[in-house]
Amino acid sequence: MKRTTVAALLFIAAAAPAAWAGTQEVANVVVLTSMRLAEGSLGSARNSPDSQQMLGCRIVVNSYGAPTGYCAARNASGVSGNCTTTDPEHIAQIRSISDDSFIAFSWNTSGTCTSFHISNFSTFAPKAP
Image (tube, rainbow, N blue to C red):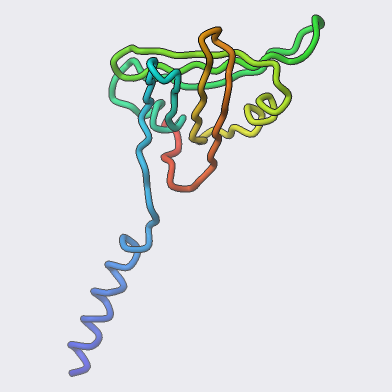
């Protein structure tokens, strides 16, 4: 009886780390030009097996005025979307992006960013070297 109990406990202990490892998501880059929307996680874009996916935002500050934000995305098929913004709320959102964030942004027909969604969750894959 003791051996069965010990064996059962060892089996449960060995299986436990896999069961408690946490939720993991792959969020490849999606670009919907008809909706003027792009999204994905930086880690998934970086780790993608194709040579096309890319995603990111940057802020340019110069002597001519307010900071300008720029975001761009390209999916596995090479479809891309991008936008620019000087909106202070958008600039704050761009500044909140971390190395492994999920980013979603949309733009209008002029190429101006209209919305941002930034998520920093443990479920998104970190970038591999």
